Image 1 (cartoon, rainbow, N blue to C red):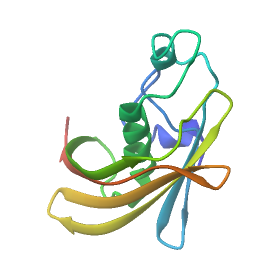
Image 2 (image 1 turned 30 degrees about the horizontal axis):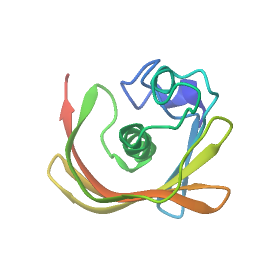
Image 3 (image 1 turned 180 degrees about the vertical axis):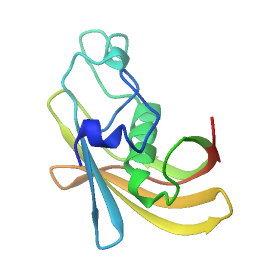
Length: 137
């Protein structure tokens, strides 16, 4: 699924759509994003030494979970928690990050997902995310 197809699922738009492609592989949502170097979050983080901020990596992981959400149509996903988030290596311009996200449980509108991100097979971030999928917003 490409960026335009992703927009049929996620309400995010540029500059906050932080996912280039996503696919479902054996029940795991696999998202990818290539850091171009001109993103808004790199301008001040850090001048002359651009590094993708950890909070942006968390947002990329969450967006990569989009194929695990059963609801379709008009909804908004809201973060409700982040647990055990760990940053292992830096993500730099030119890197392609691959996120692997697995649904661990769903309770009503609440989704709980385990995610990990990799660059060239090396771990860069991992954590457990939760969010509520609110219809009609």
